Length: 181
Image (cartoon, rainbow, N blue to C red; front, side, top):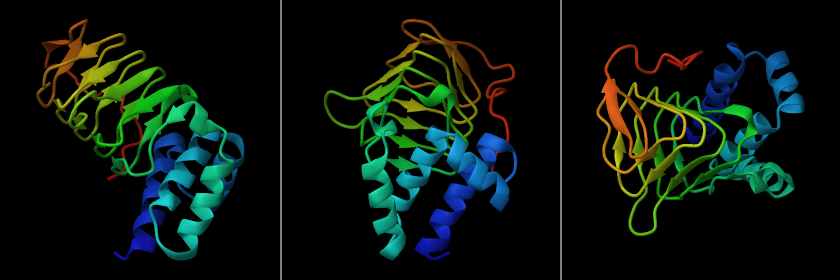
């Protein structure tokens, strides 16, 4: 898949996560009504090539949402990102976020030294969560509201608390709706 098709696919995957469909009418409505989706479109286009990259850079500069969602353009993010409630969100540029992830309001994925976290696929990060330093959060994980993650969390786990601890392996990732396959 060439670069242009890849970023169209990423925008479609984000649209699907928000609305459960990815037709043109849904795109237009989503783009006009949802500032977070509009921000994600600019983010995806900034990482494309040619004229689409130029358009993305213009949209990025015009976006007021980047004051609320601090997501560097160089951050590696998989398909189907969903940012709930429009932020605020702070993500370190060295973070890696997998496919079909939900980031709730007041999420911080940061690092004071070295790399930030690597987040797996189908992961739900609740409101007011801080993920600190170079930890690995597995796939199909749920991190409860207000948690502070300082250690790795295995696949298929639900973790909560300050400092986050795994509490069970039942029904993790249940809040991930409209998964992009």
